[in-house]
Length: 223
Ligand SMILES: Nc1ncnc2c1ncn2[C@@H]1O[C@H](COP(=O)(O)OP(=O)(O)OP(=O)(O)O)[C@@H](O)[C@H]1O
Ligand SMILES: [Mg+2]
Image (cartoon, rainbow, N blue to C red; front, side):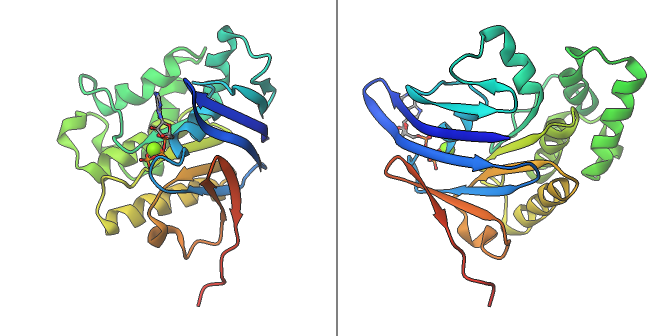
């Protein structure tokens, strides 16, 4: 479903990745770890083709970084759900509108949009907050809404960049549990984090970005 082949990426003359190879199959859950500045966020941006490799190629679904046209980017992004550390909700719209906004560009009927938004809000346990404004929610609730927004269009892959970075340990675990449940229903997930404590008991694939390469991490079985 997703493949990086000998990807090199430079910001101006600064290399971030020199020879990065990576594969992800459908339904897989993969953590991306690595120290600050290693390139975790850059890695995720390459997947949604916000930036393109300087060398090598990335293939996601039927899209190839070497041949994708700018007008195809919205179609590619519709197959992804993206979650950020700082939630990125639209502050001037209520929760329902934050989610329905994602579906407006798709040719869905109003009743279909309503059903999808309500289902996604139910999945994260916040359908009763549909008419709240983002500023009326706690950080954990905001992140749950951001997860609902990421799944409302039924993506193939969820990209999460430090989704628990602004949350306390207990709320972080709740957020991770919701993302795991979505994965168990068949959506692939790539989650970047430097919180190794949070993820170490989850038996999922982990790659470490170091010196411009992606290293597979083999975890010790849980004690
Ligand atoms: N827009 C940009 N222009 C130039 N250099 C950048 C840009 N964004 C990131 N970089 C550089 O690329 C490298 C990788 O950054 P990136 O944000 O991907 O790291 P990260 O692993 O996500 O770090 P963190 O854990 O702090 O979020 C860093 O050296 C950073 O300074
Ligand atoms: Mg980052």
